[in-house]
Image 1 (cartoon, rainbow, N blue to C red):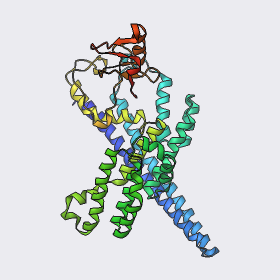
Image 2 (image 1 turned 90 degrees about the horizontal axis):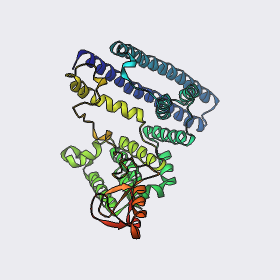
Image 3 (image 1 turned 120 degrees about the vertical axis):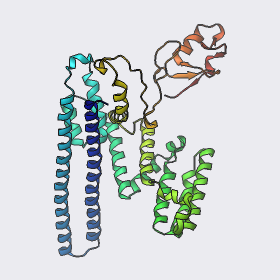
Image 4 (image 1 turned 180 degrees about the horizontal axis):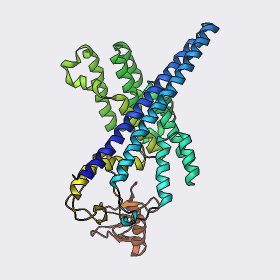
Length: 387
């Protein structure tokens, strides 16, 4: 790896690390404030007198001021890291942009940034960006992400009521997709009861809620979850000696709350058509994963690597960045789309629906031959695939 490449990689990693720390500390500050507000409201509702109420309100006010100061300090610290990193990157990238021979679609770039801000940025920042760029944000998309952020914040506080309400509202659609979200939700509550030593409560909870969480799921999924339930119920017998039973200990070592968050994001994405992460976030993370590989691949290239039409080395990315390939119709040589989706023939080969209809209409008796093999079939025998 060249010195320049190493500096760039270290700078990007430092910014990413600072961003993760900043986000965690910010959530901690806000969670503490929300916790104090909730405790204060509970104490006020108990009716402890005007003097006590005034004292509670004053304490909450001081806590809010302290949180604001802490948040401002966190923002200042993070933006200082970003500013230093930006200057470092500018010193490394001294190439004339004209040499890149890349024509950027400004509207497309702004749309990608706006999509990222819907998930990551405060509403005020998003509104200002939309005004400056002229990009319009879909209201339904924005509303869905607001719901997502609200429910995830509640999960992190240990408040599962908003998630439970959302599951009840969408139970039918979740069952159609064989989603295990409700089961993961109940499993987390069961684990928390078990960790607290409330064995009888955990057992009663399992009897009351686990059967309901399996309703509507496929036989295969239900059978797998039943085995999981048996394992969790069995663990209650050995709660005080889990270290001696690795199989049971593993049940409580997994971060069940994080798994529930991810399952909820996936379920919301499937129901609303939204990706759980923005394209900009995925591309940035994937780029950081392959930065080292890219440096090695370009170390022996003469001249600027970015002017090469292709690299001789494949770059490996983790499975979470592996997505479905675009299906190209072998007949039309064009990518399929929602308007012209891929269809599977009886032989298993895949072409576009438009190509299948064209082949059928040009054949006598509407029987046509697969363009790849000798199989013959009718148009009503093709099966549409979801993309």
